Length: 336
Image (cartoon, rainbow, N blue to C red; front, side, top):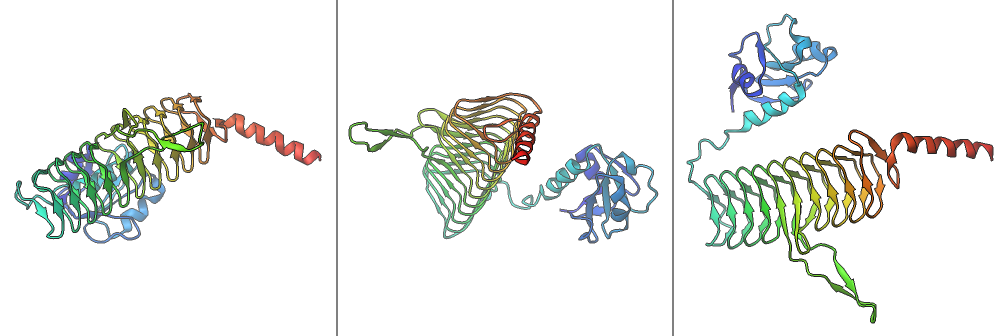
């Protein structure tokens, strides 16, 4: 979509210096910008490069307010955030030319007659949509994806190719699920027969609920509850190759980086940050705002608390404590 700098400023709550009628087509990086692009800078040292680039306009902080330049500058409090919102704003109406009630289903897709598809829904090649499925307006189902029976998808969701959503899962609005992810599969729950030593499957009949504005990375897996629910709350972002076990409750605005493994019945409260390759054992609780450094490990039933505190190591403890321990070990090694 083509937008003026003035309309972008209104959308992102910014102030324009220069010609606000200049039209912008897309976002770009400074080095790759072309005519019609808009770029951003977060500090003054990169401002000159942005202004000399081929971009049509620049998003910057208050430090750029006095910069004299023919190129329009959009002044905002948080340039990176405004840039992200601009990207979304520029792509928002790409389907506006499609009639509200029109549904696009590829000839090779299989959509059960009992499924309910909202306006502007697109179902791509070889996708399968089961009985009782409800899909909200503007949602896209990627090629080869399988949407199981009685799944609910909200409005403006993006389900990329080869995603599998097991029956009964519920996804909110504007959820993004990247290629290869599996949502709602059985949890890893087994009971051992003490007499024979064999394992028998514990019932996996719970459900999976995913809130609005959640993003799930490629090849991530999220298990449904065993008897109750696995829940991912609004705004949480899950990276590629993350596993979330059954009965987990993940709060709002949580960030989980790649290759993290979360065992069953874990509670992660709001605004937690979990770095890459972290391992959480079953029944762990991570309280609000805690930060787990890369490759940290948290043992069964442990509680991590400390808003804004970074925890590191296995078992995870405050990073200052962990670094002191490493220093002691280093001194001891030198004495030998």
